[in-house]
Length: 482
Image (cartoon, rainbow, N blue to C red; front, top):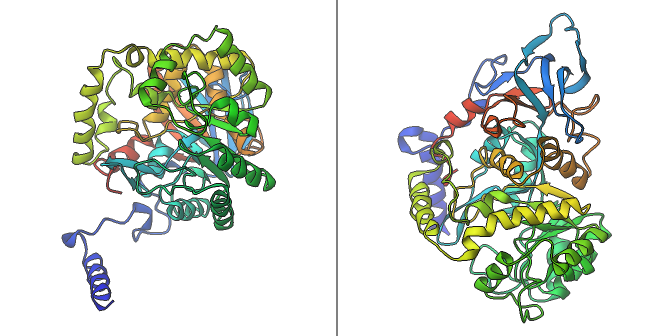
């Protein structure tokens, strides 16, 4: 015990001594500064702001409107219309040639990142800022490795002490035995699942993520307990099929159809099939087949929502581009090297599944939406790396456009539909008077040029305008460390 106290005392001295002893610099907003000074990454914080003459995609799915203006007053949308006048003292932002959309509400996000050897480091400093730079103003953590960090970070953001999206925090992963990740607990039956749900509900978790090896009895108990509290359950499943989960009452399934084991031959109850068998079954799926249509209808009839995470699926598909240089610059050198070593190996695969995976998942998501199913969107910054907040949200929108959704629908899926699922749609998710001023100003028209999505000029949360370029420049080389 004495040695532990000495170690902690030494750490405190080292941190107090300053950068020469390895101190991590305090975030700009925490450094001593005159009261009136705002952080460099804040471009606008005036009480009244008018964004004038912009192309407006409001998040409801309605057609885009040109020549529109949005008046922000005290963090809220005061007026939306054509030709709005600027009251005295208003900060005016010219929007000609630009597109305005709501802040994104993304549903499969994490505050951790893969650092190698099945370990995941909590990025509680860099990720909230990067998500904000990528237009994410509200998010759900779909699984937690450091639940107390996530819960405390949620509260810090809500109190205005840390910049970042509002957070809906899931409990730690609820998984059965067999996952080779030491940070994830293995449930020991339905009673153990109940203990976990009760504990984390008391600690402040507001939703639950069930994982691959969970069994039907455990999943059913989790759903029953969550629903009794008015909370929701999602799942990245394997041992349990989509049809079985829907019958148990699950609210949400992750990764579109990418985790479905319903079509694996000789699938055994409560057993996760071999990866190769799962991949082969997915590559062979025909959205027009009777079996697939029957499953889609079953999910739609039971109100199960699917989360599109095309960003993570793209990393597993041969022939897709490497993560952009701007994203890779955010990584620490060892984490970047790890990604750059693995990516070429995956590109060399020649099996049918690796070549057609992304396109088939896109077709299935379209089929689900065309059948009346509700999609929400997420990015999942896990896998072997390369899905990096700040860039991943923009890429997810581009991939949904590639899948054939029109831009107004893409925006609705990634904003209002997510807000509705979280029960936050009276506050966020669309550009309407009275709602919080969560907005993204894009240089260009993404419906005509998807590359315009790489040009988020400003992101507003509660009427404060953030400059993504400044955020990115201040966080180079941080992801993988803090």
